[in-house]
Length: 206
Image (cartoon, rainbow, N blue to C red; front, side, top):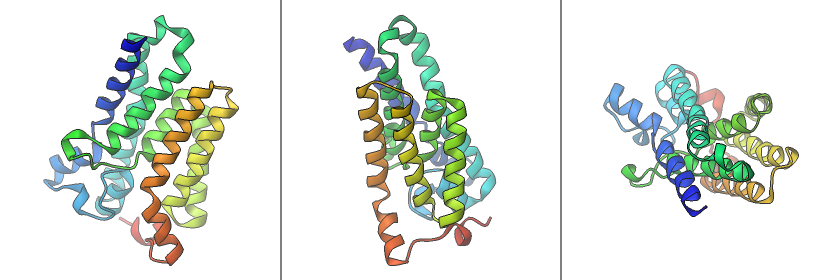
């Protein structure tokens, strides 16, 4: 079992470390995405700093990462350990996000993992992932803040794991995923409260 957990964690982390926005902007623009916009490496900052087309590519790949990792994990271990499937899948997803947020080759300064969150939702249930995406878009349009849309998605995600009747360890992992994302978004929430946070309508226009 210890080997299974190790494979689950290592696979998730190293797939998460494929830092799409950082690598794409390095290759295409010869720049570091972290030197622009919000200062992080993720889909939202790519949109804000380099436009919707590149941002959409980044978001799509970041969403796919947990799905690919889960499929590989399924072939390696989960098909032989059905009883452990729920929490191993969630653990794998957690480490995909940690790899995305804290890639070792970027001095552990990456993104915030929001796009990959939807990938984990898709692994749990694709139709419910679409509902989560719709909620994200709706809240983003209503509030005009990505951070608020992310918060709504995190709440929905934890609720989804509970609603699907997943085991206690899976629920704890879902809460950990939400907690670390909220922690990374604390500066955004502070700026919202003091009125200095950039609105979607003014930043995402390219």
